[in-house]
Structures are given as structure tokens and as C-alpha cells.
Amino acid sequence: MSASSTPRASMGTFLPKLVVAPTFVAALIFIYGFVLWNAWLSFSSSRMLPKYDWAGFTQYEKLFANDRWWVAAENLLIFGVLFIVICLVLGLFLAIFLDQKIRAEGAIRTIYLYPMALSFIVTGTAWKWILNPDLGIQRMVREMGFENFSFDWLVNTDMAIYTVVIAGVWQSSGFVMALCLAGLRGVDENIIKAARVDGASMPLIYRKIIIPGLRPVFFSALIVLTHIAIKSFDLIVALTGGGPGYATDVPATFMYTYAFTRGQIGLGSAASMMMLMAVVAIIVPYLYSELRERNNEH
Image (cartoon, rainbow, N blue to C red):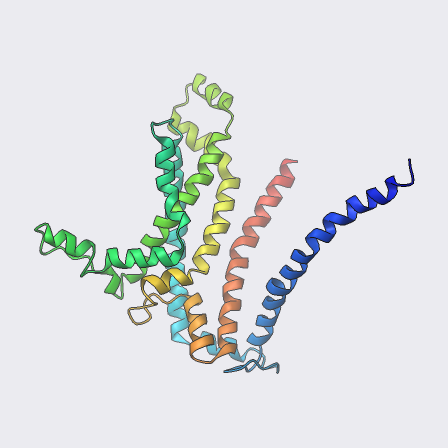
């Protein structure tokens, strides 16, 4: 081995680390560092400006005693469950539909995926016009002669949260479709042919073989959809502004309101930590079960 090969080998090992190091340091500081800073503020007495004293669980006690927080948590539960379930089911059915080698598949796939290219601000604004009783669906149907038709969910305190579900599903179901379609195209056709030879129908094959094989796809979609649901700040601000009243308030809008408009940084930090804990509580057990199952298979 020549003397020059050793420095070259060392450089080949060191250079990738050097290139990645700035990104790693930035992520360490601006993601995990701010998470820790936010956690400390949630245990302080911070109000208008950050304080670095220790106030124990005072902010969390205030948070749990706040009725608006419980309304926001309930809204997140309603929105999150409906949004995730409908996106998964609709995305799967769209993927199965496109997997039948239909005509104009590329154009249809583009149409389904197009909403994902839009920001939630654009989606919320567009659906705000569509669902506005004076401008959108209700007015259009009434002009068609159905004058008693009513679709005022956007201004109805009991139904407004479901308008957020409609807009969210419209934008994100195409993303799930793309993931599921990639998973379906990766299924070994020999397995399907063997099942057909044994007399299994296609619905049974999908239910017993293909869909269970898409578990990694569902796991990836679940993580992304959960993340979208919990941080759905921009969609709600553009669509309902958290209203009517605070009927569509979620923890993200609650946190912003109290931290930046009401001057209660400590309370807002406590709310954001509860959002983080919600993500951890959902993802970690599922991730543990997946990793455990893979270890058992090996």
C-alpha cells in the first residue's frame, strides 16, 4: 500500500462527516435545542417575556384549568381521527382504482396529487369561499331552484370543525394514494397468480394478502398524517380563524393565541409541550410494535 493511499482513505472518511456536520449542528441547535428551551419555559413563570425561574407545574395547572384548552383538545381529537382515517381509506381505494391499469392513469393520478402541491393557506382560503353560505355551495344550489337547501357548516359552531376535515382530506388523500399505489406496484404478481389458481377472489386477495402487506406504507402515512393533524395551524387560520368563537380552536391555534397575542409565553409553551407529548404517545408505541415484529421475523 502506498503512503499516499492512507491520507486519501482518511480524507474519504472525514470529508462526508465534514459536509454533514453543519446540517447536524443546525438541527441539534434549532430543533432539539429549541425543544429543550421551550420545555424549560413551560416550567417557568414566563408571561410577556421569557423568564428562567422554576415555577414547577404552575403553567400546566393553568392549562388544564382552561376550558378553551379542553375544547381545542376535543377538536383536535375529532379532526385528527376523522382526517387520518378518511385519508387512509380514501387513499387506499384511489390507489386500488388506479392499480387496475385504467386509461388516462397518469392524468387522473396528477389530478388526485395536485392538491398536495398547494399550501394549507391556499387550501383553507379556497374552501372558505366554497363553503361560505353566501358565496359557495349553498348559494349555487339555491340558485338552481332548491331554495330550502342549507349548508352553513362554516358558520355553525357544532359543524365547523368538520369543514376543516373536508379541506384536510381533500388535500392529503392524494398523498396517501401515491404511497399506497407505490406499495401495490411493488407486490409480487406471482403471489396473486398463485392465489387466483387456488380459487381466491380478488377482494379476498386484497383483504388477506395485499393490504396486510402494505403495513409499512400505512405506518409511513400514519406518521405524516398525524404530524399534519397536530400542526394544522395554517389550515384552520385560513379556513375558520378558529371560529365561530373558538369552535374550531386546536392546540396549535391555542398555543399561538396565548403565547403571541395574549402575552402568556409560559402557558403557550406548556400547550406546545402537550402537543409534542401527543405525537410521542401515538408514534412511539406503534414504532415499538413494528420494530418488535420485524425482530421476531428475523
